Image 1 (tube, rainbow, N blue to C red):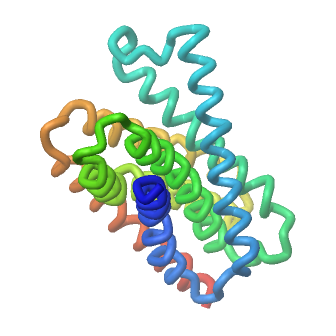
Image 2 (cartoon, one colour):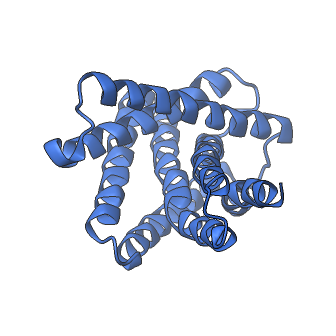
Length: 230
């Protein structure tokens, strides 16, 4: 019971930590209930993405990395980025609270961190129910730290990039074109991160450097949109 509770807390903690940071970028805070619903939609979207990826893996075998190289990484990244976007788009596109371009980034990041929370919970709960109990607490803690600085942040940053392009599309009255561009960029970023993880299994320095560069530009994007909202 203690291990399960420990896993549940640490599984969700990385997403909440990054969400707290990202929400500080919004000078006109969004309704907490809508943010909570968006986060929950992200959780559900992750389950939906899992079913799609599992179905592809079982039917066309196109997600076999050993056989197809980078292609499976690209396909999985595209599936996840599109699903994260669609769950937010359907939820907030007609909402009266979606009243500033920067909101596109805020809501997409929120959903993305919900998406990441599902992945984190699945991983740490799998560890919690492992028959090898001696080092489980350490394994869960180490996995949480790794996911915090890695995949959780990746999801937030990639969706932030889509949100930025969506916001710019709104400002320039070319939303469809800009959203498409954002999804392509996010998919490529996501794919390259996963490639780095698989290529450098003994170190996380390269993925961290990569995410740091993305984060730099994402927070510049936030600043740019904040200035437009003033």
